[in-house]
Image (cartoon, rainbow, N blue to C red; front, side):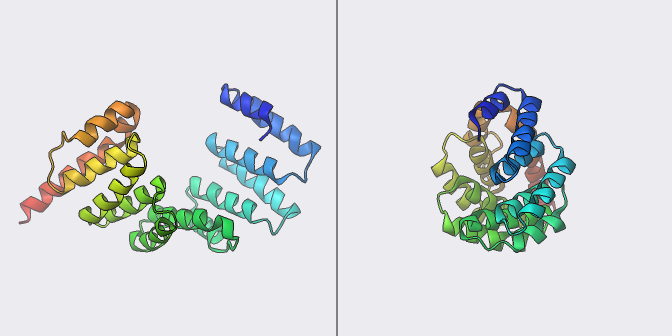
Length: 221
C-alpha cells in the first residue's frame, strides 16, 4: 500500500485514504492491489454496496483474478450474504489462497449455523497451520457450538499457547473451563478482562449462555 495512504488511514483520516485510493485507481486502473485495498477500507467502513460495486468493476477488467474473487467473497460474508460468499470461496483454486479459503468456508458455514460442515473445513485449515491462533480459535468455537467442551478446550489451549497475551484465547479457554466445571471467576476470565475489557464486555453473553446451558442440563438430570 502507498505509504501516504496508509498514513492517512492510521491517523484516522479514513475518507482521505479512500479518496486517495480512488485517485490512484483512476491514475492506474491496471493496479489490482489498489482495488483490493480500497475494498478492504470500504468493508471496515461497512460500505458493502460500494465495495461490491468496486470489485465487480475490477472483475470486468480482470475476470480470472482470484484475489478479486476472494475479496468479493469476504465482502459478501461481511454483509451477511453467506450463500453468495460461498459461491466465491468454493471456486478458488489458487494454492497460496488455500488456507484463507478453508478458513472463510468454515467461517461462512459457521455463520449459517452448519457447524458440522464448518468444522470439516476448519480442521483442515488448522492441520495446515497447527499453531495459527485464529484457526485454533475457530475450531474451538465450532466444537463449543456442538456441545463438545473437552474438544473445544483442546483447541482453545492451542491458541493460548501461540498467543498467551490474547484476550480472545484467554476468554474462550475460560468458557471451555467453565463448561467443564470450573467456577465463573477462573483465571482465564480475569486475564481476558485485564487484556481487553471492551472485548470481555462484548463477549460476556457467551459466559451467560454457558451458565444457562449448564443449569438446564442439571435440571434435566
